[in-house]
Length: 135
Image (cartoon, rainbow, N blue to C red; front, side, top):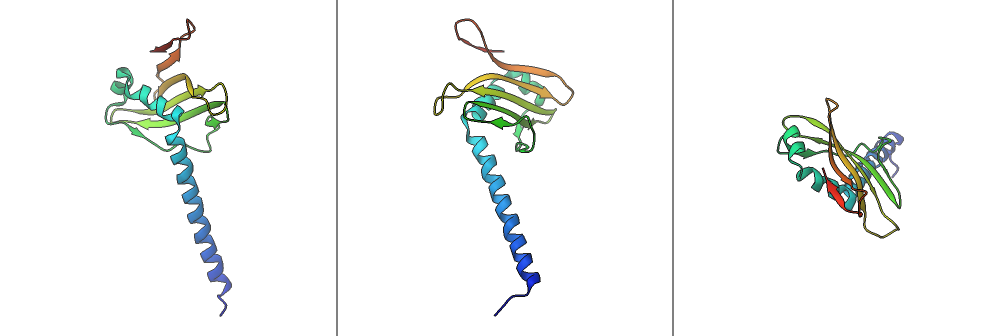
């Protein structure tokens, strides 16, 4: 028994939309589990000035996958993570790198840019003795 073409197109559209939604969710989940993402959020949660500016509780939103700032390859990662709180909202900018594939990610810079343009530096490695400096 054959199905009318209209129903076939409808069911194919539903299946394609559902597949895209699942893929989008899985990509977001992969980013949120990555160590460069987690390290940046740790910096945000441990920075009193940033917490005061945003307010608590903090909300971390999905990345905009179409944003050209978001970039990850085998050795470098740059993300623009949308965050908000009761007082304000903004983006957490993260720059991270690693020496070789399968090595540990190292944060290069993390700063919070609020919607009013104010920037709050959260992390930048110091150039002296390869020590890490929290701002």
